[in-house]
Image (cartoon, rainbow, N blue to C red; front, top):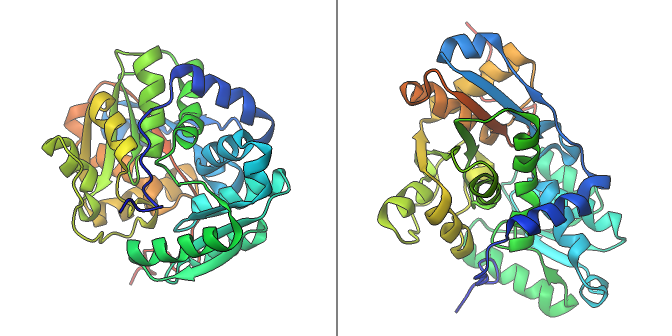
Amino acid sequence: RQSALHPLMSTPPSLADLRAAAARIAPHIHRTPVLTSRTIDQMLGASVYFKCENLQRTGAFKLRGACNAVLSLTESEAARGVATHSSGNHGAALAYAARLRGLEARVVMPEGASRAKQAAVREYGGHIEPCGASLDERDRVLHGIVAETGATIIHPYNDPRIIAGQGTCALELIEDLPPLDAVVAPVGGGGLISGIAVAVSALSPQTRVIGAEPAGADDAWQSLRAGRLMAGAPPQTIADGLRASLGDLTFAVIHDTVDDILRVSEPGIVSAMRLLWERMKLVVEPSASVPLAALLEHGAAFHGQRIAVVLSGGNVDLDALPWGRPD
């Protein structure tokens, strides 16, 4: 049985799809800034450009894909509302995008999801349906919603409309910066890096696309090396936005267009997060810190290069920061 959470989607978006998405969502998103840090450049011996999707509306890159998907729905699809599962950022983005079009959004969220992210879903008008942490439990609750309401499922990442929307951040990077040696982005379900890879492979083929993944949630690293989709062990990481597993579509894009995936440690994620807060005054969540952690832990591979890092989001529970007061 194919899970509703992992529908079979066989056709990746094209560059034309990304450009259409960019035009479609432009009135509703921020063209986020690219910032630099002399301190971080000196630490790495490289020129690093941070694409600040933590400053995006709803606090994460997810709005790009959600807006593109919702605004692409036919009238008959839209009339039934939308539904999804999410640990937080996609759910908030879908609720925001649905509100733009006057639709109802139902978001299946695990009961342990960040309180800040749950609050954001509600603030944007989404209806939360609590569930357990397992895929089967999320699937059961989502199927129930669809059976009751006929809602259209907007998958968080395994959907070409979502991938096309996420890839618009790379279109902006390529327009805003001179040629890059590499773009580094976090990998959870793979929608963001897939969209980035579609853009980069078409417009800047000399630029490498590098994924960054927690070592405790490394199914993408395993899958890329095995050449097939690997389930991986249950994720164990502070980066709650990266606990999802690849879908068949995102794996296909990653397999064909992503150059490498680097794994990082949990202490490395926290250290990178703190560095971004302290040195760049940027509020980022753990998931967004993973690419910088990859640069810090694998620095020799990037020495002397021009690197773009996508800071994927900034939705942090301020009552549960991963560092305490110093002794």
